[in-house]
Length: 284
Image (cartoon, rainbow, N blue to C red; front, top):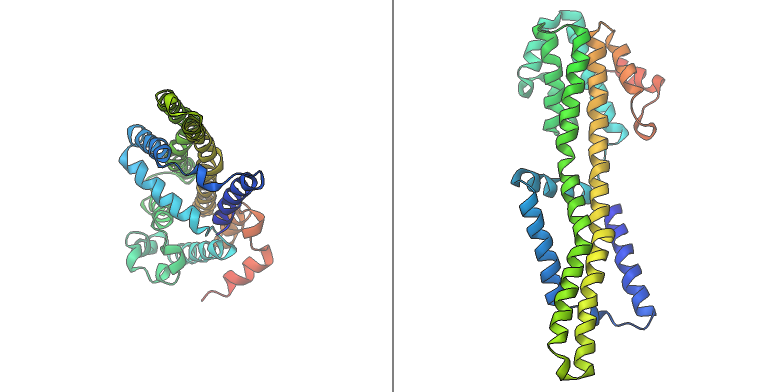
């Protein structure tokens, strides 16, 4: 919702200021300029971006527009499910984790936390991090490097939509100039029609420049920045999960591993130490 409010402020400020100066919004509406600018921008996106990244852009824009980020409750669910899994491994041995980690969809523990399992990528990261512990294929001190490598790969992949949108934002001012130049060419061919016709065509051409710059810095670049923020929040959540898993693999008590992970959470989503301890001890 906040992002929509911001976009409304941008549009109202620009259009309102233009009207206060005596302008009429109707003179900014030139279909040909919209077709040239947004058509060319769309073409640039298709040429420069693979289809999976385009799909990812659409998905990330939906998330950004929804404005639903992680909350304290999101991290509390992570801590609870991690604690229960770690506790099973601590009490019953790592072999007891197989039924939960190898088939998480049927796990009685994971079923208790639908808010966590509703994010397949987070679920997959968690179980993939636990599998080497059960298999014993790598040493505990090597697991942290493995998780960090996976995080880096995910972070790089998540950045592709941001780079694509930033490319469009950087291109839009120049695309606006293309539209303006085409408008001037059209104007030159209509000089014989008189000053009034020429003035209207020059205004249309200048609208193209304005539209390109406005779209770049008022819409596309801020959206790219918002997606970057969404990506950073997702990386922070996965890093918190990785910290807990790595701590457990090194032999920390479940509640200690969770406490270490808690300290990586940003302040507005971080439960207090006493609050966390009471919450985990209440789990049955």
